[in-house]
Length: 232
Image (cartoon, rainbow, N blue to C red):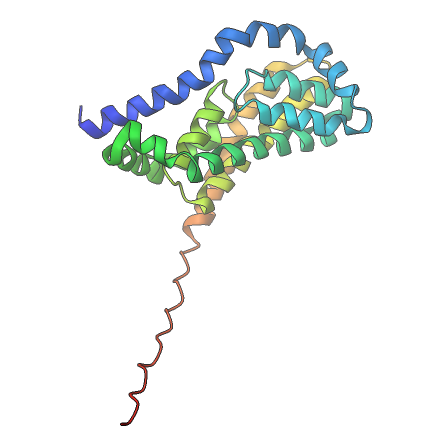
């Protein structure tokens, strides 16, 4: 195993520890408080701003052990599969964008300290080749959405690839779990299966479109004429 790979694994383990440790400490409490009924009551306490409270819960999943799928189901229960799905998709998208942006612009120094240039370079290679798949498929898995979004930011994954991949994963997942809540969880197997299969289909289409759009060349840098010499 090369030094770059070892450094990258260390960085991944540190990020996963930052996500898993809060689950071990507070996970049981959050699960008991934010049950399907508990999450609904908590959001309803904010009245007409219940939808915003739901989005805030989904975003807080970046640092807290919030059961996001339960929150999404509760939003579907409250608002129906269509409006609830839109709210869930928006919350999941916003969560991924914040994690990506924070790590891209604020966490680079810490990542360099942990993984070094070789480790980050290896991460950049991985996200350049397979980043779209990692981001899209991670949105319907536990723990991984936050970790993958953080790693994408640290690896400076291209925004023109990250955002479509995030949408391909977040939108079907949000609508699937909103449908579970709306339908009284009568057919959760179908919804979960679709939430895993639809991101694959969407990303296949999005990746093909992105490949057909070449990067636009940067405009040439204007050059200033040399200063005129003053005549003596």
